[in-house]
Picture (cartoon, rainbow, N blue to C red):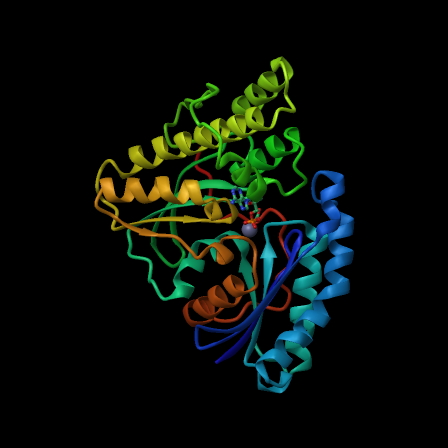
Length: 336
Ligand code: KG4
Ligand code: ZN
């Protein structure tokens, strides 16, 4: 079973080839152009996907030494994301499937693909699994009881975790997406140097990051020398600590009833090494197995799309060609 996975929901063009759930080759191209605008410009994102996608697909086929005609299925992210960007991948995938004689097309939920990405390195999710999805657009805590069996436990009331890393990074002069560099800036800093709030929410499993963002802004406004390197490192470390602390409190509450066999963190922010360490400690405390995708599979990529598509094909079959891209697709209904 040979499958091509395509990811174009935001500012990464990702393509990958898999054979029987094993990765053959994958490539990711990050659109640098957005950094000068401080965030993703949707129109530019679509145009760049359009420009790069078919070349990248040709490249992975030549890396693998495969011919197009040897392909058994084509998958693309169908949501959530930027509609113009999604349409590039979805239209390409459907067109390719038709041109190859009507091989199956699979439309994939990007959030669901993030969740299952951890399995690509060979570790199956043990259910029930407590999963925290933390990306640039989403922060959701869900219980996984199996494929397509998800229960919503909590989510952010305002900004997503990645979004707050990007915004606070921007305040510290780091270009979008600021998460990776902000976490490097935090490394030499003192996490206890600057007190920052950890939000309390009515549902103890919800998240809120907007107060933290405002608190950081106030500290910068009030600082004697906000450009001082070591002060910035302390602020970055204190901010990262406050995010970790908020996440840790929710995970400890959710794991409190000891009903989970595993704990999973997924999505771009799960690439954060300090957070991975904290979550590891929590898993040990609760005697539950920790599952975290390798760093390169945490951020957007085509491999996770191909992997989930194989699962989906086996469980429910191909997607109809008239299934549309959906910018607001959800993982699980928010029951709040
Ligand atoms: O999953 P992803 O690639 O795209 C979305 O689906 O949103 O996540 C991207 C987000 C960005 O906000 C980025 O700043 C954040 O993940 N991110 C990080 C790190 N690496 C990526 N945040 C904190 N620390 C990191 N090491
Ligand atoms: Zn993502």
